[in-house]
Amino acid sequence: MPVNLRGRHFITLKDFTPEEIKYMLQLSADLKAKKRAGIRGNLLEGKNVVLLFEKTSTRTRCAFEVACFDEGANVTFLTNSQMGKKETIEDTAKVLGRYYDGIEFRGFEQDTVDELAKHAGVPVWNGLTDLYHPTQILADFLTVMEHVNKPLNKVKFVYAGDARNNMGNSLMIGAAKMGMDFIALAPKELFPEEALVAEMREVCKETGGTITLTENIDDVKGADVIYTDVWVSMGEEHMFEERINQLKAYQVNMEMIKKTENDDVIFMHCLPAFHDNLTAVGADIEAKFGLTAMEVTDEVFRSKHSVVFDEAENRMHTIKAVMCATIGNL
Image (cartoon, rainbow, N blue to C red; front, top):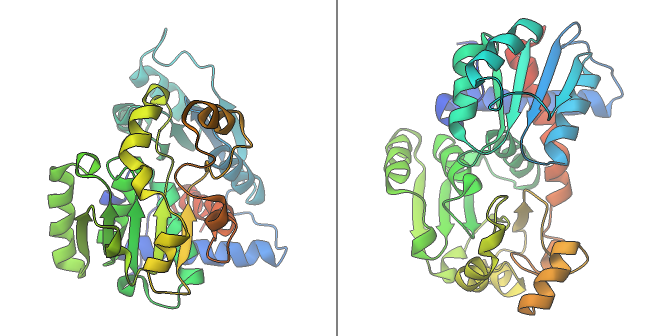
């Protein structure tokens, strides 16, 4: 049965079937090949897109903007709207829906993007909230398809770190949908919420996937992918000391890589990564806690296992696919 996503919101991968996710991944690969061939697109010609940002970004903003330019859309980057200050989210959504064909939101509260989607009358895309980061997962899975010589439903995927943050949640959802063997490697207090785990285990009954929550680093054995994220999310900067104490045992280092017993294991990270002390935050962490790296060592980050920049590039191709599928001239 043909997949048609025109007019759909993109809020969480929970809203999509495995077939629809496969469709978006294949469309992403096709659009990537088209760009590599130097073919200028017109799938978004005549479309207007607005990007609403509460949180700062490098990859999300640039990926959306370049994707728009590549396929002929016009784009507005908006950080100083009246939304939530002098105008309600509902009213803002209704106004922007009159001007634009699609709305992207990157911010804190999941309720904000849900409210935008409820009232905009045009597709709304989640560029990141505290709960979910679905565009990142499409980029991640496209990268796995490119670098792991297995179908997604045969991949053992380990996420090491804060397993109840937006990346832990979203990777578990995506893995369940695609029938993967998903391992959340974290201290128990940072396991995902029980309700979400139970919901995704029900999905696994249909897709053949598995979900394992573990504190045992030896469970990385046989992993095809080791993934991590920053230990402290935006808005939690006051929690560095607590997170370091909770997660330092789960740092992705060469010892963990070797425990996979897979010379072809790939390392992934959504970026930015604290793999050295060459940033202002990195230098501050070294001064306060004596760490030259946090969630991943520089050795792993720069090793043959690391595919983080292919992954970052794929943000643009997968975001382009989401826009083309939902508002494009396909």
